[in-house]
Figure (cartoon, one colour):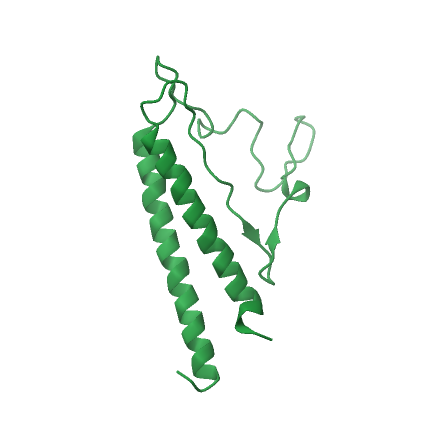
Length: 135
């Protein structure tokens, strides 16, 4: 088995690639902050199972309580409209919906997460090299 086949390293590489792509998308949002009718975009964060494989798709949506007589699912929002403004956009008269403060917060959080993932990746490689006697 090569080192590239290890699930943890594969998951960390996928996460680093996601952070790189998200940085590109966020930079595009900031650069178009004055473009009329521009809507900011973002990427959905990948989820991983215990084996390091990416999970997602249709089966990951939480159950919704559509009637007061239904039992509430754990972690589910009260209704579809109760996102507390997280998915809404503040649109300016020109039709642009980019909030620079929000985008800059996302950029800095993305940079910190990328640094954490790259640190984990390099420490994992160092640990493997130590385990085989080359470190």
